[in-house]
Amino acid sequence: QLVESGGGLVQAGGSLRLSCAASGRTFSSYAMGWFRQAPGKEREFVAVINGNGGSTYYPGSVKGRFTISRDNAKNTVYLRLNSLKPEDTAVYYCAACRFCYRDGFAGTSTRYDYWGQGTQVTVSS
Image 1 (cartoon, rainbow, N blue to C red):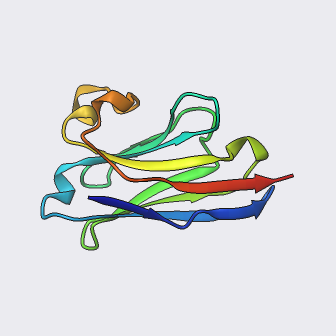
Image 2 (tube, rainbow, N blue to C red):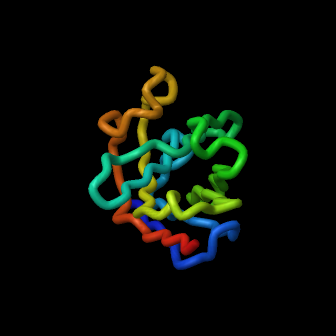
């Protein structure tokens, strides 16, 4: 089970930190990703981190502004959102995948095994 928190309303240029708490004993065996979905748009990949936290990847739209990290002792993955823009407004989801990072499909939502319920991020202009 994955449970996100930390969303909210923030002004453009502001920051938020999202958290995703996972249950289970094999957290470090999973790569963890963050996706977002705005109304009327497809789900978009925003970040991924491998199981031991040593490798991350971001798409160009958020690279340099968003930072993913994880604490395996706490079974938690984080997403720091800086320099937020109105176009970052969306529901943000965390997800876990067993092999997608190894296999080169970390940006593909259908490769993820578990999903959280999402947390709303709204950026006002």
